[in-house]
Length: 398
Ligand code: PMT
Image (cartoon, rainbow, N blue to C red):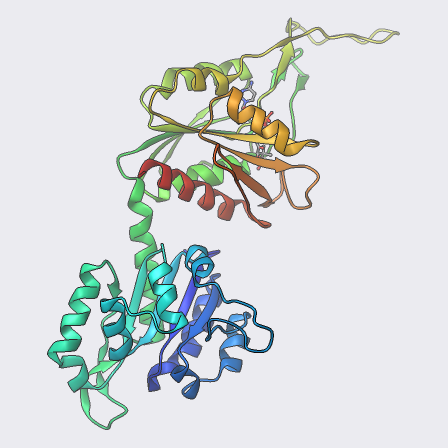
């Protein structure tokens, strides 16, 4: 569940910071990418070197690097993250968060974060029980911050009581729970997804097709379903199994895919057109296997119907997302398709990029809408799918 997730781990000045090392390692081993932000005081409790080694990223403490003046952008950091986890969170930091104080990078990042935020408080039992701390925590809860409750036991002060930061394994479980909650954000929505390659028969044994494996479209269907959407996947030929909780309808030709999509789009809130659909199909399908002669052979092709353009022309308030598979003049061609097919946004992938396109498990895409474009680095197809679904989610809640 944490694979490919971007997590900012915020560390504040508490003796429990030693557990942040284990926490970081657990998150990284679960597949998350972790960037660590520390308050200046936290450096007294655990070294930046330890955290940089475990997270495989430089540690961020100050607004800029005093050596070269390079700016540590809390805004970019806040946009990058899928979750901001502050563990340990001191009484002081929680008080500042609840009041909107922004006097260090960890706090400015909190104010810039668009993602869910979780805190794992750690402090002495009297500080924890104090009415001011409880009031601040209540405020944070009201602000939507997830509080990962501390445990009871021996405290650094020698006292015994509630205030010990939750154990790293418990924090990871809480983080997974937060992601699973987030994933239900599309409950009540119905999406149509097309995936895979169409098959255009020439005769009973031969056909025209392309290299699509269906992996990209299936990852999108899976991501939508995990967030609670009802998903109908109209699938061309692929060797993949249907993702969990997805209704799959198998088709072969572009014409069959057109019929299934047109019949179902009306009951949907949106559609993602990821299939590689044939633009041409044999004008006549031979009843029997064509026999070879001595000379060359010509096959007459006729245009197929453009499924995306048909849905785009009658989309009403629905959301329509398209793909563009290009090999030259990529942006220009993708922008033309965005307009022509009336997409809300289009996902461009180019065969000129290593790791992009057909068959593999990765892709390199640019998300383009009427406002501009966002280029994503090389990612797994599932990560790309999550980014596409994030954008869908944002557009639906606008
Ligand atoms: O399946 P994989 O191996 O994982 O590979 C993924 C992929 C490369 C197939 C995928 O990322 C992708 O780019 N899919 C779209 C491929 C394509 O046909 O692009 P296009 O530029 O020709 O078509 C533009 C858009 O119109 C697409 O959304 C396409 O689904 C749609 N279209 C095209 C023709 C047609 N007759 N009907 C359509 O709906």
